Image 1 (tube, rainbow, N blue to C red):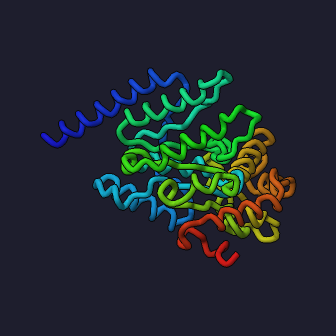
Image 2: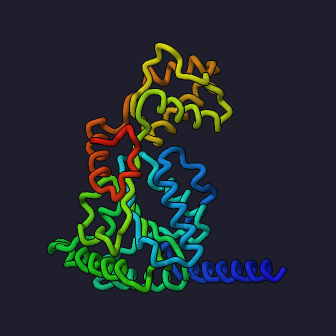
Image 3: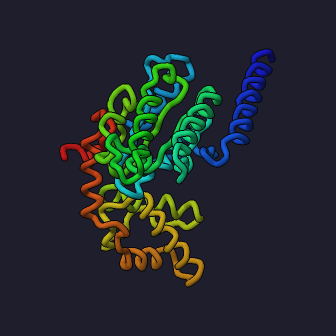
Length: 303
């Protein structure tokens, strides 16, 4: 009973902190509302095992065994944001996403960033998610086109991310399809310690299993195994698979086709939204940045 009261009090205090931060943030940060866990993320068991170990260490207070940050990289549509949402639901801590803190007035951008840092510290423990990190974090040499704002953003972010007192309190998560464009100093150990690649489904069977799983969420039952003779894509990102599932659902409900006929139609009409050449290049970039070989599925090992 005493433990329940203590846990309830801790939760109430955490919620109060969050409400105060939300009231003061003025759109500079937004809170993600995770309703899923790593169980909802399909595949890449090595990545999920590592993340769960880090969460367990965090909950036990073993902060010196924790990374300061993650870099999640992979092709467009591979579910980088989805992985962060699953991590957030598993960790049970506030997850904030940086809003647009840039301003046209001299000094306002830097002031907004300083306010963001104060708000993050007020939360106690949190995950900070920065999407499109290659564009959001500035450049060491910002040039003269923006009066040096980009360079100052870079310097402020670099200093904050390397602050030793933040370990175990602020966990930085950067996501990008172009990790090569993130400044080397920002993704070095001591700022970003773990670099996680995410990949498309590889092989027709794996791609079909992904689509079948998404279709089942709409109560559309596809055949258990890939139908013979169906030329299914051999590489499919979760984003592309979701688009196929939407088209499949539309054909079933709007045109009243059977799931099997609708499946054949969407596969015949499928055209990749992103060039396979670009996808392959982004896969190679993600592998090049990877910090642990166990993160790379067998289908992509040895590239």
